[in-house]
Length: 277
Figure 1 (cartoon, helix red, strand yellow):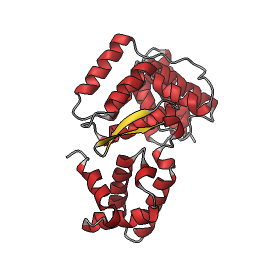
Figure 2 (tube, one colour):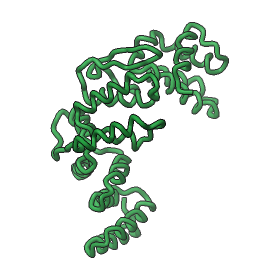
Figure 3 (cartoon, helix red, strand yellow):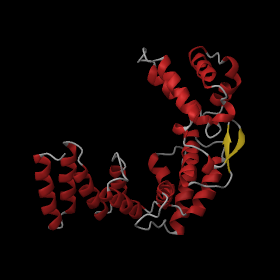
Figure 4 (cartoon, helix red, strand yellow):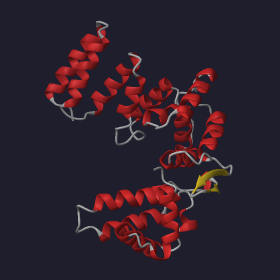
């Protein structure tokens, strides 16, 4: 809900926009948003960000909306932001999710720009969220080939591998994709694979950790964090490595507390041996 103060700032921002003072209008809307989240303010601010060639900030802002699909106005603005950022890969993911074409066509970056993006990404020692988002600007062929090469790079951060695997899943790719995991090459078919947090194994193990440490709130975040690292390292082959979630959860807790992983000792040793130092 928009407060009276926010409505006044919205009105002032509209007046500045009409005068061509876009930067001033943006500052007023940012101030209005600081008083509390309002979809009306978010939509206005995203539109001005795009108008002021700040489409990356528009993307960050719109992604904080709890529902991008049910409200037509929000979905249309989201689509425009994807187009402004050349985020073709995300647009294709949305099309796969919704089972229909986006109302506004999204084009990738030009080929020269795509090549530069891939070269810069390869040269990064540490990959930021912004670096990762740059891959969304690739066309589908370049994305598939480049992502596949990253998935087979033993030095690649496991978090990047996890994100790439899940992006393949969101795209609904039906090809066999290879991924380097626990010191060896694994294969999976994204179209037949669930996102990590939707798998039964993930939900049962996380639930078991939550039950075990419910009365120990100081330990719970640490244990959940470590569990996510372990499960993320095993994705997308969770079912191959974890046959009994109760046993695995118990052994994982033991491993984290005492380094005794019992029946899963070798597996957990492999997970941590393959994490970046």
